[in-house]
Figure (cartoon, helix red, strand yellow):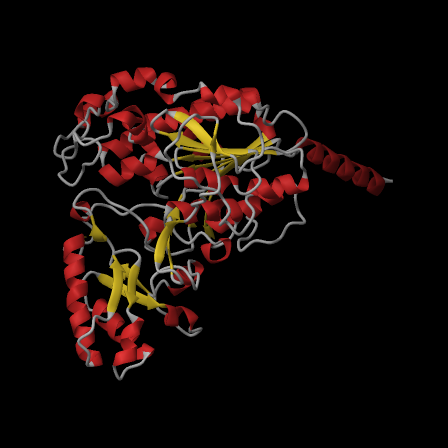
Length: 544
């Protein structure tokens, strides 16, 4: 009899546990463009809002990386949304060099679509047609056609690729009108409310006041840190950043919109738009799972211009901390804390300014575009000597894309493809700012054990990109501007990103296991109860 009571108790406890768990009505994925994995810890003392809330209440995977070499916006967002490496989802870079045509095109270019909801838009026409895998929203809608899926960003490629093929609609920002726009790639009618939801009006007060450094930094402010000569672009290096101190060559037709792109207020507008979308489109209101993907792109523009060690980045994340708290509070009130799951991550990291990379001096270098071209021209002469020819042996080169050999030269000299490739790789590797070179032959050779070979393979498409990839040494910017910084390499600071899951029955903890951004989609799909979809490069993470 005692055993029977125990059995009944176990069954009751099991039932109680099951009723405590609710399938989320809304899946929210937020990608903060260019947010490095160390920022949460680096600026933790500044946080009192949403970033602190996520860190304390969510499950954080502190050793999360993109496991591909081309760490840029388009492949990063496609990877997050699909759970596949770029080699399989098809978006290998922002702009792709197509080998068969020897031309480069925007990875999401689609001239067949037309803008809707606006009388005029001068942006590139784009769509998800080149994305070869379904997004999180696509999968959810394939299981329940009554589910809704929306995507939002300042950047078209971020919004479009996160939204996938069957989003109800993806929205991105038009600087000229300061309106969110979209195209006829999506079948749902364009919402009328969006036409009147303008950034220049919603963020009017911030535009007038400008971007001011938070007063909390006043006691520790160091003007030399705020006046780094390598900073520059839309604004001059010093705070405050207002409409009156922007660069003189800016287009007056897009001035207000460009101001939003280059300040935290652009991402503030995106999050406000997201709240309005949830309200007006009734997301998370019924038994059908809805999906909302959001990318915050101003973070990337600010990071490129001022670098990861600037007051601007520190202040951006202080402001984002407050914006996210407002957004989370809205979700808790509007949807219910137990009715949504939220994931925070990023599409890539960023390199420090070489001039400020104290951990690697004197090896840190900023190699100008002219210096890089000079080096490549010099290598071309050496390769010609190796092949006993006077014809150029290099067709094209780029600091991050790599080098394209001129294979036609082999028609007129006594050498083969292997000799040409080996000669170029040998001489490039001897440059004091190059860590490694990886060719298509290396990628296709199963026993190749060069550093970053796996990440390079994960970014590889046989019809995409230059034949020889070059990987710079740590803290070397190759062929880049004299100002700012960038990303795009397989190095740690470009691949390491945050990953936090917040939701019902997800325990608050930090995990140090190495995981990858390809794991995000399978984890979320499983979490919302779709257990029969197993087609991912990534794996389901245990949110215990």
